[in-house]
Length: 257
Image (cartoon, rainbow, N blue to C red; front, side, top):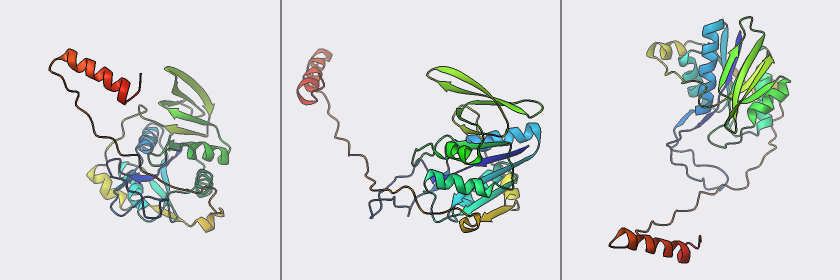
C-alpha cells in the first residue's frame, strides 16, 4: 500500500506570536517551529496502515529549508521517505499548495492520503479538500476512525457530526483529513532519529513542477487580539453583599442585563 501524509510546519502553540513591522505577517525571529498537531495524527495513522498492510509511507511538505526539520521528525516516527517542495514560505493559498503537492505526488500513486484537518496557524481547513479535488479522488473530512478492508479495495471511515457519527464507505484511492481522537501519535525513538538521517529526502523545485506561483490570496492586515481589561474584585463582607454588588456591576457597568 502506498500511503502519503501531508504535513505543515507551524509555530509552536506555546510560542508568543508578535505582528511584524509590515502589519501583514508575524515576526518569525524567535519562533520555534513544529509539525502541525493535526498533521501528527495523519502521520501516525499512515504508520499504522503500513504496519497492518505493508507498503511505503511518504511524507510531503512545502516551505523553506526549516521545513526539513518537521519532515525529519516524521521520518524518525517511522515514515520511509520525504518530499520537500522548496518554497520561500508555507503561507501559499490553499489551491496553489494543493497543486504543488499533487504535482509532487505524480509518481507516487498513493492509495490513501492523510492531511491534518486544519493548520493551527491560519485555521483555514482548505488544503485537504483542494488536494482531493485536484487529484479527482474522494475526500472525507474530520475522520476519527478509518478501517481498510482486508483486500485493500475499500475503506470505511467515521466522522462526528452534531453529537452523532456519520459512516462512509469508499473505494481507494481516497484523501482523509485527520483530527484528535483518531489515534495517539507516537514519539520518535532514538534509533528512529538516527535512521531518519539516512532516509531519502526528495527536493522539488516549484518551477519544475509546472505550477504557477502567483498568489490568489493577499493578507491585508494582521492585528493582535485586544488587551483584556483588568479584573475586578467584587467587594462585600458577606456572600449576600457580594452577590448584590455583582448584580449591580453587571447591570450598570457591564450592561449585560
